[in-house]
Image (cartoon, rainbow, N blue to C red):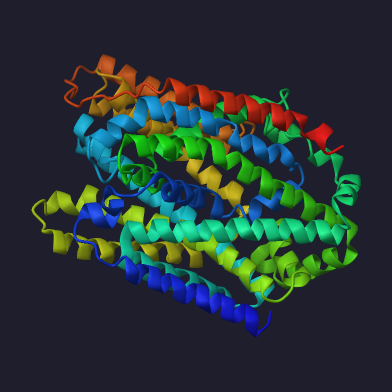
Length: 534
């Protein structure tokens, strides 16, 4: 890196401070947390994808595809459940949530059940999301330290302070438009790495000649994910489709970091376009960075110098990076193979990856704390005090996430797997709570709460004592266990259920046909990749 790269990084960071100042006028909860419900589908779509994909996909997913043992293009199966989940949310879940006029998505649970259900899920969200975000920032800071030479604590402070300032000032509008910029930078970074990687290999034909053929198979119908500890039985078609459906339905529909974007939309037509965009655009983006991973992994095998540079960085930082050698592939390539100026842009892309997820998390954690806890004890709070208190809470939660980043400790495997495992413990039971609230009438609060607790505990039991069950299944299993237990308890323990909420369904036959057709298309395309790359 030289002065050109550092200038690019500084301009980027200062620019984000300006975003916060530009959107600093927030007069109410609807302004600070929902952007005044004035956001269009395109910025919301880019923001949604940035939060999900940019957090670690730029680093860790290509590492899985290109280097990790047992990796490869089977990573694409992560996307199979997305179109189906978008169709389900569009028809059955989101219309009722949007119609209710809530800020915190968990407020709906109190309206349908009682305060205990709302506070239970809100608490689970706050703990799981802050820990997962801390782990993500921790790993990004370690990688920047190992490759760029910036001290670990300085990386965390730079990422954290800049993000907190613009999130503190600008609220949801600053977060969304910041995500849009970061998404563009991230995609540009992927394309640059892909082009330069192919160039270093001597062209696309040479890449096809030397690519590891074992890594180009994406779909496997023989794996069911119930014996992965002994035989690598994971990433099969059925666990990825079924488990992925529950994971993404929960993530996009009931996780505050994503549902808050849906609630920020102008109306149901905007939400329809937003869900369609997420269902259709994620796969092409994922395919692009997966091919980038294949290209860089192939280059690593062909270029002894690349291997030596990675090994040198890894050995020099083995105490902190143990188990994460593969995650060094992209940043080491950037530092050693790209020209100055381009290096600065790509380092900015890495920082964008962390900042996008951190800003979304901070704003969402602030929203649920404010709506679910603070307003409970001060319901008559004025708008000015509300916005100021919300800003202080965003600062508090930012510091909490950074605290977890400083003390995350050693984690095994690529970071993207660790974060997904943490999330998958909770996603199924949380989705079940909303399914019970919207799609059933006789389930009461006690039944729902017991079901949620049993579902989470059962998933934790699977993680600790039944490693044979692939963690993607936890999303489906946790949801089904929660629903069954909740309905059983509600049947056995007679209590009156609150049935006062209006349930809204959206008749989206056209959208369902489009999303279902796209699901079939990406499955067929993924099955065809071995012949395409041969």
